[in-house]
Length: 383
Image (tube, rainbow, N blue to C red; front, side, top):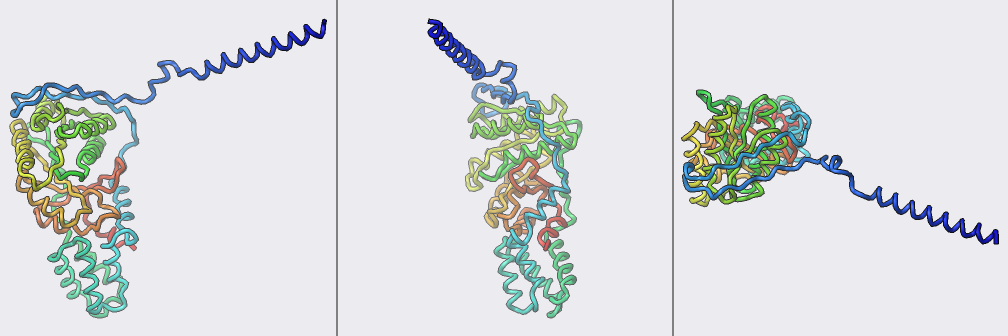
């Protein structure tokens, strides 16, 4: 009988331990309290107003998205280290233009075949027929027929002639200062897929790091994702974003942003516009309207045309039309890394008569750098 009670007690003890284990296990599996859930930032939602009218005065006010630095990031990378990455990405191992130029320096003899090969390489690398012929003529004049043995001399001559083509005298600074107390206004334009919204976000990051107060205008109202993307960038760099209703009037959004920039006393208003094919007359006319409407409030101090460097000579046709509509003042070349040929820098500057001011090096937040002619040429000749 005593043995029976011992067995029964053991069974009860086992059941009690099992019950306690299940109960405590469920408690550990429960979600944490509200105080521990709020670890990741919540992106503010845009409030859509009524549909915008054709004129700014008739449009519903654009929504102002209050943002803060919800995702703290390290300070922007200095320009010098960005150019160091440019040198690496334009090295001969990645870039056909660099390989072609270095092949000239490594040739045992600069005979007709060597010059023909170089000419073909330069044209293929989007330098253009005219600039290529100028460079070849100058190099053949400067270098003796056997100067290939003097590598140092040949490299210096090549560097000088490339710098002459790229240009070292142009004003490549961004005009971001308005007159009479109004903000500077930067209008960013280009065709679809060049990365305008991302570039605007990166530009805002650079300007904020330099101590400027910035306001962003999400004037790409055709893609909701574009306004959301710009809002995310605004949150990251701690600046406000003005956006309107989806499919609303982009000129109204730009107008409202500049008006708010004046009222708030910000330094710079950067306006993101929808990508548009240069062959679509209606969309290009709309772009001209955006600029005209903005200038009812403040002059546009900078019009940046964003060109995908990988499109090569096709970018020239785009540039011509945009320049006619909005009077481009500077060029931004995106994707100027190993996938681009690099030579487009020269003909696009000649086509528009305005300088390349910024270059995109990749997808990172600091992959936007001021264009430095000497750094660019030295990167191509890096061995």
